[in-house]
Image (cartoon, rainbow, N blue to C red; front, side):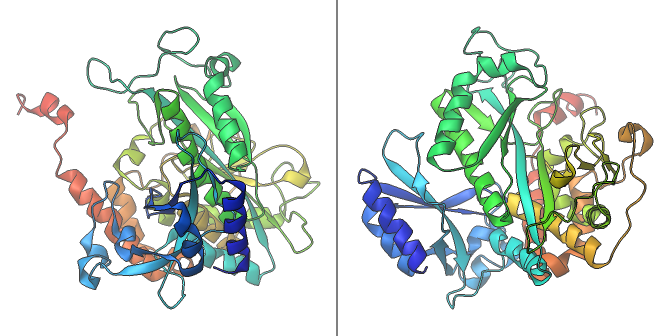
Length: 457
């Protein structure tokens, strides 16, 4: 692990003498945090020697089933690999009753090489391409989520929680409503306090356009890996704090039939070795520099190839419906929230692109890796984007992106460019994992099918 990691661990144990256990966490292909819990006196050994976890961790579907078609399960004897803590992620877990801590891990081959199926290493592979050019992506992650009542309604469906202020169940919500934030101020404040404890750079909190829906934004980082680590940690934090407040937090892309889905918006700018934002231009009409336009072109070009990363499961595609502010075509424009890639307004120095397609259920590492792959493609090949969209892109551009799980999976198998960035072997395993989960999903007969077809056919 190195001297820095050991110093970090020793200092943490010294400063937190009450800590009695540490959760060692690693995100799987779906972004689900898995791992093991160790006692306090095993932490230094974990930093020095690593911790063994099975390689099949990256063959697991959303329910923890090993998808054997990946080749990471029984075919290789369920063998272990070494996992080491990620520097800077060791912290207390303030929402737990007992004094405990957590740290992120990353998986390596037993000879020290990166384990190519670990999404952190997939992102690192893309970041290395930018380092070769002397460029650094600056990334911010914005994720929407719902809080829901632990109790289901009379039809066993999700329902919004009771307002802590009125005691009533919200039936509607107004986007950017301060009153809705006031109703949940204790919950939001608990998130901010927990984030402060864990040194997560939480910025703004926004009430979104449905009852119980919020967006918590993280500040930008000139380290895309750190930005994604913090997104994973914030998701766990929000779930933990919600539980403390008697609610459930969900990052499902579409938890309610008639309400908006939850997305993940990624902001990216690009700086050179002197720290200059290469997307900035003073006389750009809000569209950024020529380099930014090349980056947009690349992102748009790789959008169909990346769709199964942006929308990784069955529920993801419920979100792509007209009228719910979700981009369904390869569009871009200046300060336009109806497009897939928005160039936000503001000062030229802060010029960036905002990717608006992915759901809240996307794996942050793979999402950012796919977007950065598009940016790299665009600037390395000097691509030109289509004309920017003004006005309502939903009306002017019919859906063109894959809009079902099977379409996105079929496209993934035909991909020609993205495997050169993410790694062909990783792409093979990712397809096997997602396709295997789809096969299991399709075996399930839903209650709606009984309602519609049991007596009618």
